[in-house]
Image (cartoon, rainbow, N blue to C red; front, side, top):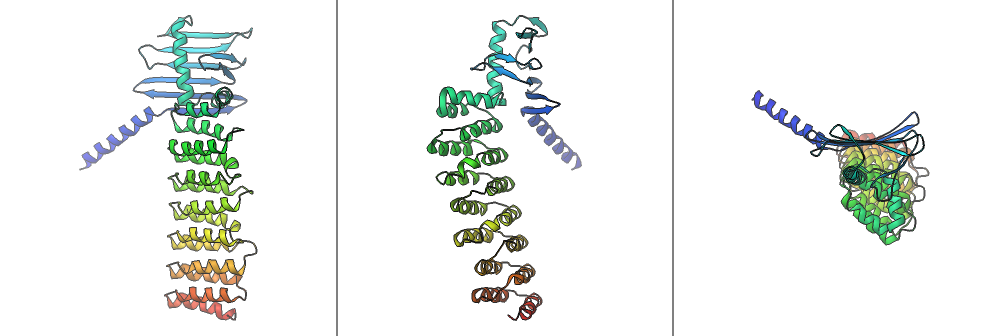
Length: 379
């Protein structure tokens, strides 16, 4: 049995290692005033690595290097095919480009074979590694417009690269509302990584949440995030905006209700509470989201968080108390009612809400705790 278990664990380790080897790696570093961008991909001992040091410019079709700063360099190592190529491009003393090129360890002139190889590598680096992505996006928009950029995105590989291109497109000036809707819909179905989709939504929030025509598309995209953490992170980022319309806030609460984690949902709703309590429509949407919390502890925690909202009206407090009646735990329910009593003021509906919620407490001890508090308040 132990031997079989060991073999199974060994197989899993081998598979995980194999996945690691097949996974492209991308690094970007800034240290002591020097920047380095590196993309590499390894498969069964075959490897390609592309490295950019400081500022390197490329020609319009990304078939060659066009300029390099005096302290910059462009390096490629490629052992994937039948031959192994190396190329180092630097700037000479007179500003000219110097190309140190070798094939199978032998120095060679940068001939037609080398140029064709470089074109293939650069095309792969821009489409799979995101080489010079921001500059390339600007060029495509200038030369081919939004339609051209949307077409180019179909050739990209990897969610990180797709996100960068979509991000630039969705923030580009002059893009029509219809094209923005279409592009975000495309992005939310093309990008499979919850992290990258969340990052995209955080970056384009200022465009989509400032226009009510775009608000539904934004939250529809958020609904496609499977990770509760990333879903909540995207909504929390949107919530930091001071210019959210009533429509946007309502849509945010509706999206929050779909978060598949009581903890993440509760944490978001607590942060949002102060924005929802003063308006009946928004408060109703917020309370609906609270009702989808299954954990009694998180339900209690969320309602307690809302008690901290400034100038909580009797009507808003009544809504919180009525929501607490749905809490199954007698302890959590009673504890919240005791907290809420600190905000009590004379109001017929509010008094009725407290009394009705207390009646749903099954434990005599917990109900007695609440009744004593009622008595002290001359209820």
